[in-house]
Length: 359
Ligand SMILES: Cc1c2[nH]c(c1CCC(=O)O)Cc1[nH]c(c(CCC(=O)O)c1C)Cc1[nH]c(c(CCC(=O)O)c1C)Cc1[nH]c(c(C)c1CCC(=O)O)C2
Image (tube, rainbow, N blue to C red; front, side):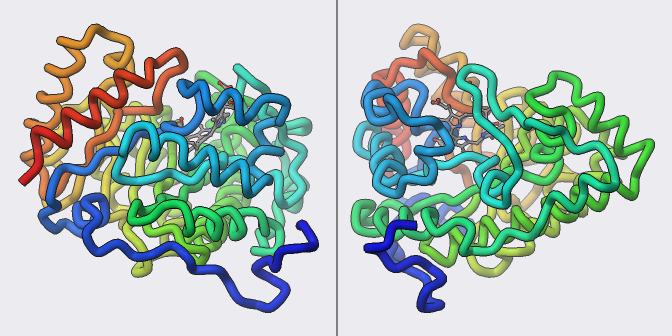
């Protein structure tokens, strides 16, 4: 930590500098109230497609960038300035808390997180110690800086869910089939539950640090949960995601998202999250029928951003129409912004959502 700034641990206090905007369409929708317009933000809105992001990040590794509060603040603000989205997502990564407790993990450009020594045995469980807020002073500091920049735009904090994090640790890197992870669950269920419950504690603490610093909502990314059958999800993932989200229950709205999880919609909603993120494979009106009373987030196919304007706007309108079946709708993509997306097209979507839903 830099010596010239007080951190969260030196005087025992935390920064809570982000104002609570009562008029935020995003927060109103999260609470199931009628917002002044349908709110919109994009998963992975920071980075990837923005030239100003590439410029800001030049010469700095991903994890180093995540530990540099001024850079985190600038990159978090870039999509808010450019697109006029209704929420900012904190610039960080799901593996930041793992690196913070000493796991030897790197984010390799174009590949993703890579772990030097994969986790496979009983002895490996001990390599996962609890996260202490003092391990991540840069998170509190960056959110403090954002409090001065964001004005009325709410900030979403996030974490990776235990299953998705465990997959990186057990496989040693990105995986298509998550075979080692599933094999370990079945062969050594005790080791699996020990790893996953430690990850749940780390993840819950990482969310709590962000909320105490000023994040007004959180999203739990269980990106790879779609690889599990419903029975396996219920037995091996759901209890740990529930525990992770319980860390911030009653304090902020909680969004829960997975990819290819159409078969898990009901099971995932049992974690207690107030908002269900829906990927682009399930129409929102179908999700609304299956999850009565839930606020939904989603779900324009990110590939549409690469399509021509006419189909892009037609699909945007179709997503909005389907979203009306839900108790509340937060417009988003069905997964993250794809590399090569034109920022102008993302802005077009934001404007379309705002113009056609203003009440
Ligand atoms: C699975 C996952 C990861 N990280 C994340 C997930 C869950 C979301 C999802 O399903 O897409 C979450 C994440 N990663 C990042 C953010 C914050 C920014 C935002 O959403 O706008 C968020 C919310 C920044 C990032 N995380 C990463 C980048 C790219 C790093 C760079 O620009 O060099 C960014 C902007 C790196 C990363 N980190 C991870 C991957 C797969 C990659 C991509 C590797 C690559 O293609 O280069 C792990």
